[in-house]
Length: 255
Image (cartoon, rainbow, N blue to C red; front, side):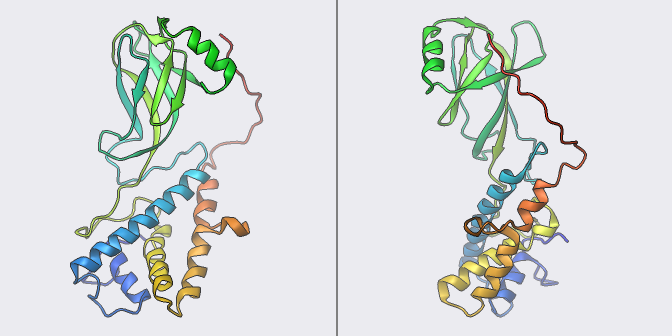
């Protein structure tokens, strides 16, 4: 069942369920702007925890918040003579968490070709790239450093949207004025977004409900220190059931 952010009519929203878990009177949060802002902030902290679990457990079917306006793929121009390209946010301003695949177009083709990751901090790789600092051509490898990538060789041509980057990114967060917006994840996990804030409220205020809430939250998010896998991680680790597990040798390109 999907749960919207706030539902003051049927009392089935995240805000109203949070009020119930914390034993507040109806409207205690939804009817107070400051408390509503605090709940939205706590729900967004829960979002960060959820994203970590979802991305950690995702296999070839990478998770992304379904509230996003487009797919987690960025295209940008290849610039003649420019080695480094910075990626901090996507087109909608969402912060980028990871870059996990890079592709480029050649000067004469519209087809994208994958380029391969290397680490400039490895001595042999760094010496090799450093020796080619001024070499231009079609990139065939890249290094990830901070919030950018470094292409090698340096692109020797201009290409509109010739660089394509696959990313992981933050969730589409709540704001206190939301009403019908639901978490962009499976509905079976929506209760996490009121239980986790309720747990934090109980912890901060020393409530007797803390232990009960903790057990419910741990059943969803698990406990890494104790080796407990929660329902969220189990769900995403089993999601790609249309794929067969096949052992294949890893092929490393040598140029």
